[in-house]
Image 1 (tube, rainbow, N blue to C red):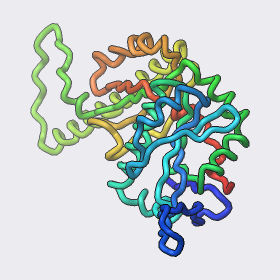
Image 2 (image 1 turned 135 degrees about the vertical axis):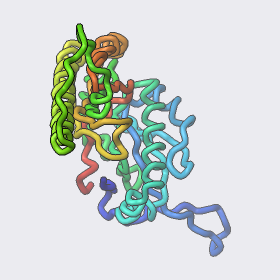
Image 3 (image 1 turned 180 degrees about the horizontal axis):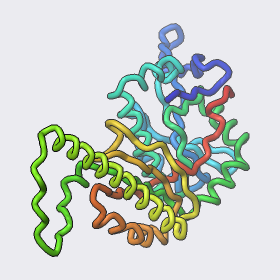
Length: 296
């Protein structure tokens, strides 16, 4: 993950502010930059929400507007949120979690009241003037995206395969007693056990793949768009098993319940397979980011 600091000089300071002291005794406030959380249409929706929100480093969230669009912005220390400063923060797990949590909280609060385009994490401009320039430059693109996303939300769907759970599932009940197995050596018994484990594992992954295909088929009738993300691994994966499908769906808000119902119970009775549906969220996966990866 990289930071995206905008301006002719990514490490330059914004204009300093006078504290109102007599000449010769004035001390300059620390230079600040403008951190952007989301973009929406200018108007009461964002103007009303912004003052209620707290951004990074306890900064007050405000709107910066141009050509009918508005960005949700808060001031952050220029040194800590420069290219080098952001690199250090994003490499610190505690600081990264704080940035991500605050960013997400601001975006979701705005999304609850109006359509917004979430910005990528660590989108920083030198000052509000650069933010306005960005809004003017990309106005047509942002307007089209906002129109496309109106009345929609994002739902996440993950499918997991858990061979251990599949192996622990009760065996099917037979009609009669199973015939007694002939005695075998410990070595042969071990080989049989390993073969059975491999078969169970393959069966769990095949079943999970079939469930994932069924999810896509049912979701296609209800969602406007789909994005396939990389399956989550390690600490990012929730719960037991391996995440084999990690997808986001853009769903009309009046069909969210229907979407949930369509997937409910789909993995019931399939040993070692489970489905996780999350959201609704702001449409992170469907908001094309602006030119924050370029030098402005």
